[in-house]
Length: 502
Image (cartoon, rainbow, N blue to C red; front, side):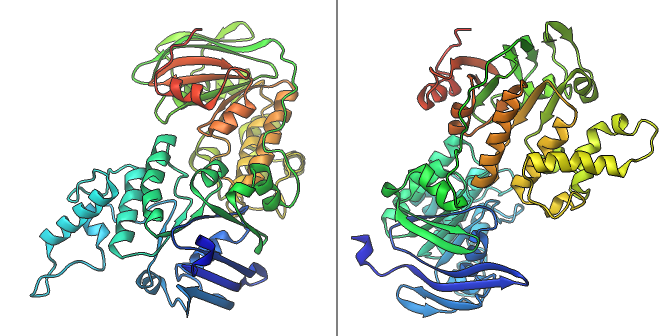
């Protein structure tokens, strides 16, 4: 039994303080060999601090760390690697202009008898590692140009080259498609079964249940519980993480109204073709599909960022043609983009300035800034959306990802739209913030907005949507009601195996 083995890693009463912030407070738990163990919690719960202590980036203020039954002090990242601890981060930390083999063996390259790098052996050893992982990546190919998923596999090969006994995966799937996640897990499972201890840090609870045998929950820097996955439900994990009973997907009770937006035969060369659908007041229309299916490209046309080659868009029955986002905003269409940092926010501006940015001409028609009015607007949305902040003059860059996302939504709701397009609204945010964003979406629909929800999170799109449109390679392949939609049906359509009946 796993519980009878000595732990690969045992932490006892680990604490870490940064100034006035107690990041970790007496945390104890253990990772067993041949175990995938989930570490979950909201942003600020202490997960990243714990990972950095194991990686040698931080030193604990007190407590004890054991590896294979022996107490150790981890003096730095290099020492952590020497001890057999490998960390795979959300963004792979590779050198893009070096080859795959050079990245795998960086810092411990095989040498010839004369002390120079044995390039031929390095390529052979890298090829052997990828054969062991049963993946096809050429050792001589440069890392630049590899997909995010393949870069994660290079990181795993690097860990194997170091004879790692512990693999820490810190949000490794945040930028991966569903197919890429399945491929990654199919490679990690055999490594786990051969004795590797895997510590899996993720906000995606469905992945926790798919990969892991046990889960440990942190909240406010403290260890809450460690339990076998089979004894937990998603609701249990969320309750332990946030400290109260919450509903991840609020029940939909909205009565649908008139058709607000309709697309007829929308086509844009090399992006999508013959897209037709409608959105009614109070309705959440989900768009599902694999990465590259064309969902975001449709949204960009609806918001006037790009132009369609053919087809038309109607708002409340009247044809419209937006030549710029400003025209879409005036007509009552708003778009919350996928990349909140690059496209959704001005990070060096305060919350109040971000919220008022799209409506400056409406708030201040004479070009005189009315700061009290701007503050009142931002405070109203910050209160409604429960933004955790010190003040609306706080810089957006200082907020957590979930609170930044709330500011993005507030910014576009300040334009008073009738149709709101949400592109991956919960990507990269913790479970507590996800609950809040789902609550906001449900309340907006109940208030009569028509909502287009683009999401790669299948449980999210299934639970939140009144109807689901599935795209594959730029075409609609299915339209499913809430009652008809299942993960299997959506995935069949997303891979092009179902023809739309619409």
